[in-house]
Image (cartoon, rainbow, N blue to C red; front, top):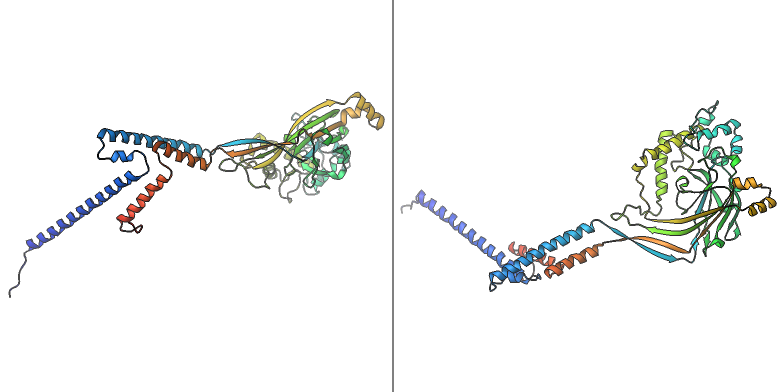
Length: 470
């Protein structure tokens, strides 16, 4: 039987027909798919919890009515977007408010009291190392800028310029005014104080003495001068040889026991011949950390100590030695007498050139401070007569060297300042929900309706069932 021969043209026609059929089937699928999405979208919009959308799709409604509702919905969406943008912008500002509350305490810890003489070293004690040193030491640490620093003090054997030949920190401690000489009398809560209630501490004014330090816990249970710390202090001007200022007297600072006392910056000056009264009120502050603020949450952190370390590192780098109060490695020696000028000059430059701004030392998030109100009056002639009759002190000594100091709480009320979040995440969510509800009659869950619609529709179009009903 002869074979049937198919022409080339006929084969080409078959392929063309098959291609046309595939295009037609693809068009039908696209139409079916578009129809599917159109039906689902229309049905979703008719059922979604947004007021007014169903009227825009209502076939029986007039064109005017449908356009009216479309305009309202578009305006509502635009206004809602503006409202959300404004609320979110306000939220990311991380604003805070401060709540002030007054709390009455049954008892209060008395503040740590640091007291420094304006004179860093006693002339008689320095003279023990050599009279020439005592006579010229003031030129190494002048109390006024017009008095130029002099480094030409005689040092034939190199002792005064050697930072490591002695423990100079200990030498300076021994040369500072002893507490027993500075404190003529002491009373706390009408009871006599003892020398054990004071310790010696290094500050930027030299070695000072401190009452109610970290290891102590003196408290008061009532406000007023009957619960005061009462001190009689002796300036001893005849012993001045290395002074921090042109004036004679003491500086006193009331602070938290964990704080590093910044005496030069914050100390209250006390001049001889006067009776001083310092009334204090306790203030407790709590700040917010990032992103609302820039404080350090570490309970052991103190800004004063951090600033001290920054200054110390700078001075050590420039001078090769440190001041006795500087918080750096113990292996770094304290500056010898002839190197003290470097310490003073570089410390001044550190602040004059604003090098301190490069130091990252935020405040601590929680801190205690004592608001102080100071008043004073001169000693009465009656008081001076009684003292001169009862002791060996003369009237001139009382006027030129003695200070009476009374420190007490003016109230047992602590003022609490606490930062609060001005606009919380919950408030933002409430405003978002309010914008949906007020303008579109929706809720926050409407967003999940949109999300649910997209997930279910995409899953079904890909042939993946999302539930038994679908």
